[in-house]
Image (cartoon, rainbow, N blue to C red; front, side):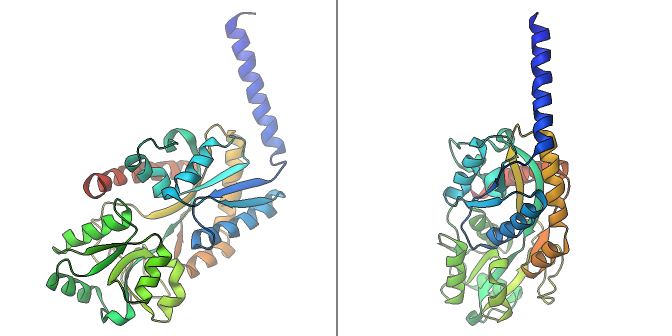
Length: 320
């Protein structure tokens, strides 16, 4: 038997094995790698989705948190996992767009190591100030920043992060400057806002809905595509004049290791799409200032390509 015939038989066998595997999938528990800590709004959302997926697939779906190292740990674990449909991975702009541009010798390549399954949602961020600051509107913040360049303390997650990039951009946009105050996480920034030890920050609003409703923190603008029903008087970033900011939205989506059989990817997509479009999930999302973004795998792939392009612009100007 010549080489070409042997190759054809091998490919046919591989195709048959993948098809058979997809027909019996899943036969054992599935894990979902989440690259952030337990208790965040994304962790809670993932566990809600995992519970529903477990029901639909009749197999346990276990959430595994791998926080730290700018989400490199979670991305690396995903890339090293077997491409068999039993590992799902949550990814964000850090995992997919910014880490390849800012971290030397990154242990994974998002364009080669991951296959897109579905986008889940975008996170609504807010430009926040302490309630005790006396800053009630964007106009108040802009006037104070212009009158005292470099004196207002802006909470960030450190140099070369998207939080700090927005600080720099806003200073340029308003022809002023903000002083960067770095923190290790969003919870620390929230505490600083509650304690009136910083003047302003841009962070996810879903983790502090109760504080916002209670008036303990003042939100001046939200990144959502339309005004949030919970805060109808708060303008969107577009209404606030922030549309020129080059970065895309903060999203969370699902990928699998490259090589996962296409029928299994399609099955996972369809099951996740049904969950993400269900009333149970959309109600949760609306209550926690998340915007559902589920669509096709191809749409997610196109979205990721555009996000990489916008990330390159942001990194080149603010994150080197």
